[in-house]
Image 1 (spheres, rainbow, N blue to C red):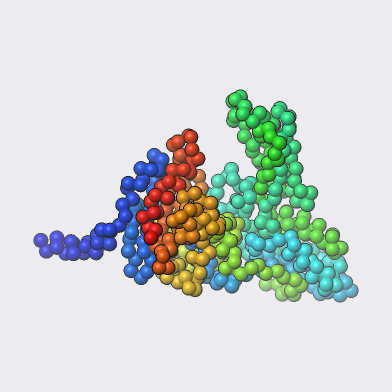
Image 2: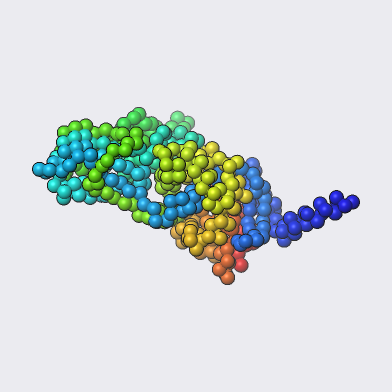
Length: 478
């Protein structure tokens, strides 16, 4: 009897915290059959109250809510004033209008670096009187090593711009546009791109009738294959239309892409070199002199774009940088994930050791996260937001970012009240963020849904999740 009383006394605080929690089960039935939902909603503070809880300990793919984890680790390790720096250096000297030695371009994995900034750096060489480089041009990519694509990325999305690999060498987002213009039905479509984009895009795309009932046409899909050195081949079919179809592709070989752009820019500014242009991925202790440099915007600006626009390239470049910065070695996907776990454990007291962190963007299908752990991260962010200011970086419902047009939240009473990171990969509809009450206080919430597949053919595939969100979250608005 004594043991029984002790157990009851121990469990009372746990049950009392859930006595007035919002029930989730009545809303689950509105989701398509097979959907697997995790929900956790808490008040924010040193003694948070659980307002709703449903399977919050289950592991699920976080998709782009992973970027909240990346943002917190980056703030804690790199600091909001951190900047990516691209440098042009030399092991030689300048005299008689020539650089006697190698020109070494040291890349930092800056995801914001542009062709205009490269042009300005080359102009600085001219201003220093350099018209000829008597030596090699060396592309130093040693900030990162190993593969530029993370484990668990879907192979069929690798040529899509949103999947651009975060290599050490990035210029103009490592993305480019190509256009497919249908011809007459049965004729070959035309393919074009800008002449200043150093890639090769060819193909054989058939134009089919817009509403063709032919099964050969129905299953003839537009496809792209990649064959090395930034060569892309389009095949399949496109429906007849007067409109051009713009396609945005990822640059797969960043070094090849940059090299061609760099050579063209040197030629335009009338600078020549006598040696070779090549990549060097090994670190050296060579003493170098600075000739020109370019700095990115501060990390706080980059994180704002990353979170509001769900920019994968920014997230993964920062992720690999965390591995390099924390361990003082070349950045990889593996040490990036280990670094995130160590940073959050040592600096925030959050233990993620049992979870899987394969990348910083959430594109990888190998990532595993629970609503419980994401809530720990949100609670830490809220408690330290005066210093971190991450809440202000999140998309605002009905206002900006990936929540601007989300149908469940873009009208009253949710508009301007919810700040949250969205997360989507096929089958997953996730959210992690805050609901702001009228008194300024926040309620933190995490939603992880997997196995989502629309079971109604006469409405948009996301209609059920939009209905679920608009009905369920009304319970937590003033």
